[in-house]
Length: 276
Image (tube, rainbow, N blue to C red; front, side, top):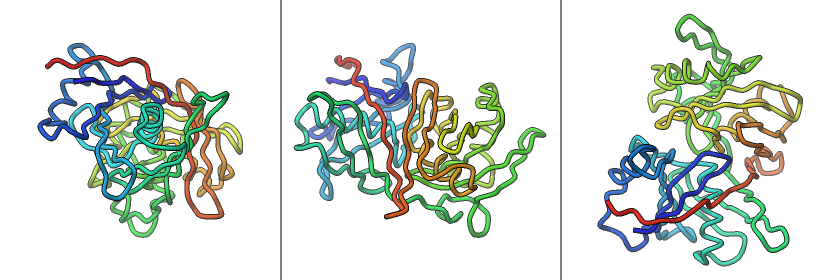
């Protein structure tokens, strides 16, 4: 079965066209494929499927076999694949995800794909929608893990995220405290954890512990969540450059329609055949 290795700023995936493959157990396949020693190696798989409500459907499964509703870096890579392989027509189309229908727009420069801008919809700010076991909005939480107290904001942009404000950002904190916050009883569906340092009113630095993946080089929904959380806490404006390990995502939380717009690169690295 043919596959494509793709990534968005280092958050990497194995992409399959599953439109005519009802015989595949995608969860079991994902666990095998994503092993970085005996498989292709990836943070998860993206599967192209038919949709009754959008132009295409994207299914996302994490490396541990758990399913994700949405992935910001994944949808950019998925969208580039669909555009360059004639799956969709035109530079604007719709993608069904577990978090609803997303609207990517391919950005061209000299006839080549230069990036992808995605309408990620409206952020969900009520704690019951994250979900988090607090009343109202989880905008200014104090979480104590292993003796250290963090200032956090929890929200949902496609998937649940908890933004942890730190200064300075110490990357060793991500694998140490990320899994503790992910599994905190406050979050009944677990949570992605993003450690954020505000650098300027329009720029932040972020590192992520992803639910079901662990440390990843990038997280698109996390960058969107970080920008919204920073604006809510009046730490930045509503357009923010989010610096991650291998580059920058531009996030705009529009006042006009309350939607979050993410712009960034996506790469198709190589293709091959999976034989197992």
